[in-house]
Image (cartoon, rainbow, N blue to C red; front, side):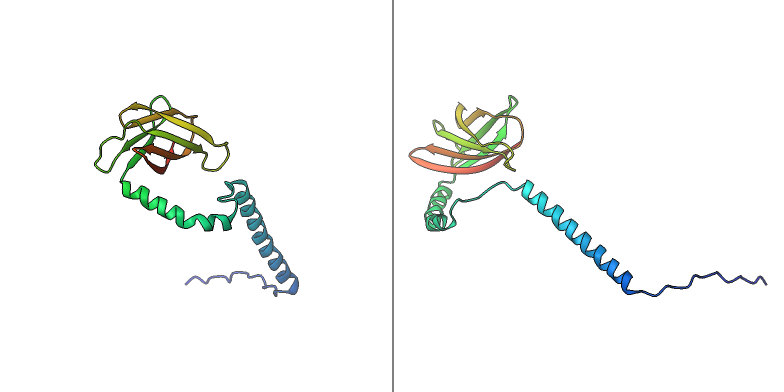
Length: 160
């Protein structure tokens, strides 16, 4: 029978106050570094202010709800895309699926992260219910406003 030789072991050093201090300093250094990094990234990608004055916005909120309800009751649908020529396009239909022709269509194109200034667009009718306007390449969020048949309808769509 073969006898195994014992494995040499090193004596375990005791955990001293100096070690604990280093552990605490390292832990908090990591936490602070992560927090500073996340804060810098958040500030760098912040898109801006949603409303200038929250109090004034709260006073108008019920009116906005009524407008939204009236717009929803119209049953209009819009599909925002980009065509082969790079234009922003809108296909607009009513509650029965019929195209809405001869509408006045405007939009504001905003960069999702606010890195480019907003661009005002006027979409012109290219076919019944189809509207288009030139738009720079890239990803954009379009805030569309349609005025037709004495009614106003709004939507938001993304274009890539």
